[in-house]
Structures are given as C-alpha cells and as structure tokens.
Image (cartoon, rainbow, N blue to C red; front, side, top):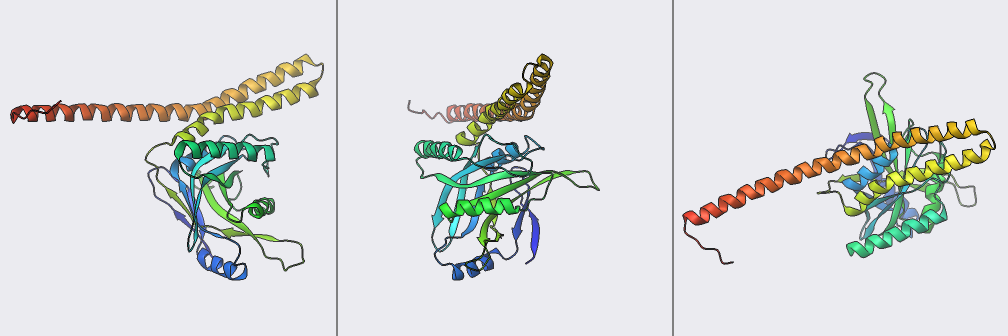
Length: 308
C-alpha cells in the first residue's frame, strides 16, 4: 500500500497531512469482514481545534503531551467525525515515548464535553484523542496502537491524532510538523495474541471563521495546566532532596526558569493573537463608521427621512 504526502491549503498555516492513497478500499474490506464495527470514513477537524492541539504539542520537545477531542459523529452510509474542540490534559507521568490517560482525566474531559453541549446546544461528546511525537516520525508506535485499540473497545468509532513536531530538514534546516489520523485493527487470526496495525483515516482541516470560545478557553487553561505539572515535579524533588537546603534552592530556581520559559512560549502567542484581533476589530469598526457616515450624507442629498 502506497502512502503519499499532501499539503493542505487553508486560512491558517497547516501541517503536512499524511493519508493513505486507498483508505476507502481498506475500509470496504474491513467492513465486509467485520460488518458490526463502525469504521470512520472521514474526519473533519476545525482549524481552531487544530491550533489548540498544535500549540499544546509545541510546548515541549522532551516529552509527549496528550489531550482529548470533542465533537460528534454523523452516521449514514458512512461514519463521519466532526471535531469542534480540543481538551488539553495534565500529564500524571512524563515519559519520552508514551502517554496515558487516567480514568480521572476521562471523567473530567467528559464533564467538559457536557458543559460544551449545554452551552452550544449540540450533542457533543469525546470522539478521540491526540498526542505529540517530538523529534520522531508521525506514525503510531505499537504502544499507541494498543492504546487506540483499547479506546475502540469502548467505542469502535474512536479516532486518534498524532502531531509530529520539532522535525528539521537536514539540508534546508527548515522546521516542519505533520499530523496523521488513524484507528487500529487486529490482523491476528482468532485465538492468537492480538497484533494491531494502523488503519489510516482521511483527515480534513476546515477553516474556522473565528476562535471558538471553548478552544480559546483551552488555550488559556494551557498555562495553568503546565504550571500544575511543574509544581508536581517541584514537590517531588523536595521530598527527594530531604534536608539539603542547596538542593531546595536549586530546584526552586529551575522551577522559576521553567515557568518563565513556558510563560513566554504559551502566553506570548496568545497575547499576539489578541492584539491582532483587536487591530482587526478596530479597523472594521472604522470602516463601518465611514460607511455609516456616507449613507447618512447620501440620505440627506436625496432628502430621504429615515423613521426613528
């Protein structure tokens, strides 16, 4: 099976989206083998939700980060997944090659999804998860496939996104990032140990007219999430340092340095985004005032009275 790489052009700068050249053929084969399983045929990711996932993935190049995706499924002849929002999660265990979602995180994310449903009037729920691959390929590892298969046991439509970040072309020295969407399927015969393989899912990133409230809150909460993670590390280091004051001072200084770096990394782009939106609103307001003045003068010239 041949895999190709295509650049998707949208309003926001988007990554290389990797997809399988014949995903529908793979799904037709699987559907004929397992007709009871609802395989997802297409995923549509809102651009502002993509922005939250990518921003979260770029907060660290040492460990993987993760979060959950909130949206809805539309079922007809094919199952289509629409992702509206992303929920960033706090890591309970920092590892370079894996991430895990605890039951407490799932409950918390489900509560957020219910709040989003109440505020938007849509029937939203958790439809998938995302995590990052810093400095490594975008393809899911065996652990990723096992994790994905476990989620699909709860809901066969559950999907996964992987953001490969902090990659650099050796010749041009230009950084790049990629995202792929996948599910997992077991290719082992019945009765044998499961052997999961990647099932590619076509991914489309749809432009968003503005930054949705839920995704804006997710970006704002990212700072506190990262701060809580650093605080846990500091607390653990204090327990290990024991009665050594110099070790306490050193760990506290490292904590301050890390928080300042995260603040610059996360808050800086958010402030720039707000300033750009303010500039756009001010420009639009000025244009509307000029248009209103022009219409008033036009009415006076034609002696047309507008009822109050």
